[in-house]
Image 1 (cartoon, helix red, strand yellow):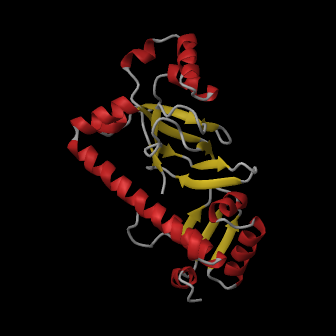
Image 2: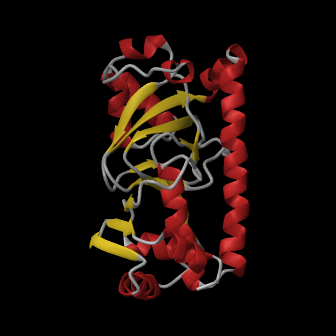
Image 3: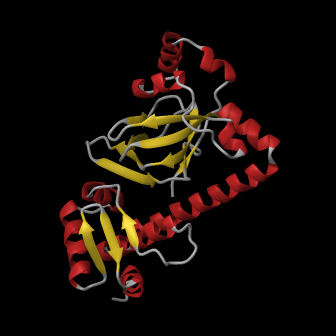
Length: 254
């Protein structure tokens, strides 16, 4: 569902002093906790051609990766951890637009300014690219361009599915669809063998994403457990016991 944009960091950046890097980060509107990371050598060498054009950065749980309205200078690819994309409405209500898991991009659709803030749900590592270097990589590597097109295609399909989710489905159907989507994203859409889902987001995040009240989400999860469709080993884990019944639930056939 989520897409991130990566920005290439010039080789000279590693030679910059911490002070110079901090000033550059401030000028770009980059969060303070990530400005210092740019002065460090990457902790691991990214493997693919696009990844080699970026720099590995870290974002701790609860910290903001990018802020809504700031200059969209970078694209990111999630290596580990999970993040959420959020926007606050004028009346103070929070809208969770998407969740980003390993292998997904952040910032691809942003042009000029970031349209949402991105917050870490857990400690996360990402590859950060400048837009210029990312675009140069795509021009240099046709295969990377085709893979990016596939990512954008899936992102568009996910956005269309979410319109249906929020506009037409009942609360129970929304939650069941959400759980099935998490399973499919974990398996990259290939098969349904893995039944356990890690939930990096809390119940409030799920409610704000699905357009429901937190009490409704908790009640529906408990109901699915009592009907032996899922199990809840912990607050951050769901085991799907009957995928067929969960699919029926998502389609309103329960």
